[in-house]
Image (tube, rainbow, N blue to C red; front, side, top):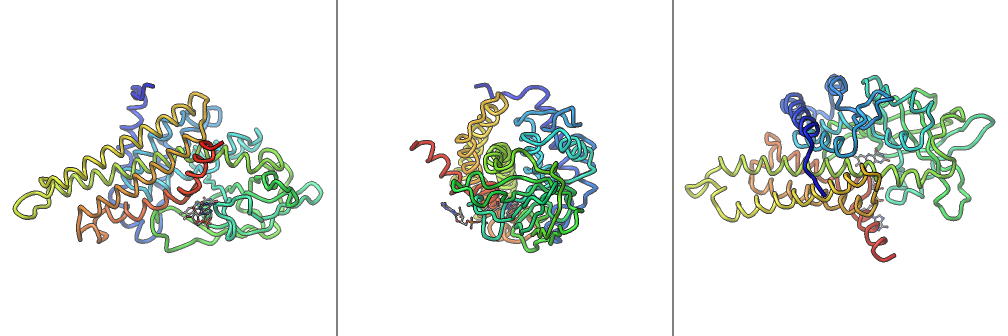
Length: 380
Ligand SMILES: Cc1cc2nc3c(=O)[nH]c(=O)nc-3n(C[C@H](O)[C@H](O)[C@H](O)COP(=O)(O)OP(=O)(O)OC[C@H]3O[C@@H](n4cnc5c(N)ncnc54)[C@H](O)[C@@H]3O)c2cc1C
């Protein structure tokens, strides 16, 4: 396996880093405190080709592979996770449309995501259905040529700002296997009966919009069914294989930021007449962080590299998802510790990294669910 980046990939890294440093650094604390974001920054990122880089050229994207898309994610997250999420998660759901959407659906949505004319999201979680996605009860019922949707979705990223939301609905409550009960629908958010309420008070990634969705008699033409009726669960699993790779990149980016802040702080902060970086215990912490980050990156790069080669390995993706997230959480914790009391106040980025890191072990498959996937394959 050769994980050396090509010249083009190195250019992508450089450009993404430059954009994130230039656009995120000065405003990250403000957006975090206010739980807001300036969509002009997202538009700028679209103009420069960072958003939807994985979308095929026929739909206006760069047609990049997983590696390239992950590199952009990693660089953005290495500057500020909240703003990175606000910019790059605007295409969340596009992976599913690319997998199983109709040409009409793709034509409608994908070019607009790339050009900065639309935002999308994907709503699976419900108040009583989190890890157990098969427990989702938002109902889609056929009525003549239409589907009528009723239900509530929780924690939908981009809920109040998206033009399109993919909604995971129950279409066959009688299916005894529970795995052929659901189907996806493409819901334009201006459809009558759709409302979104922003969820405030998140611990981290506070620049990113999160909402509770209510769907009351939302009527959709039959052509808004995405993929095959009853195949939603399997389509979701394929979708997650792709988006979990992005989460791995987010985690490694965040861990890198934690290491960067730790090095800077421990070289400058003096105690007992010397820089705290001169204590061997500090040096060991830095060495361990760097080693874990390297191991985490190699793991997810292998998964992304295999996916790019057409060999998606869901067990490897699950390993990479929980491990990279763990490394991010541990690195943020250790980094804050090395900042002492200064790490505990919001003038320093490290406290934001500490708060931002935790979501990586929760969304798109909790660490317990990821380990369950790995173990199931081991024991099969
Ligand atoms: C900021 C944010 C953004 C999000 N964005 C989205 C989004 O865009 N779309 C969307 O659909 N959802 C989104 N989510 C929801 C997220 O995916 C869920 O929170 C996650 O899947 C866990 O579900 P839950 O919160 O209901 O926890 P629960 O399912 O109630 O789990 C609670 C705990 O129990 C554990 N547990 C549950 N079942 C098992 C089991 N079988 N074995 C072992 N342990 C288990 C879990 O691992 C977890 O630790 C988001 C959440 C947040 C906080």
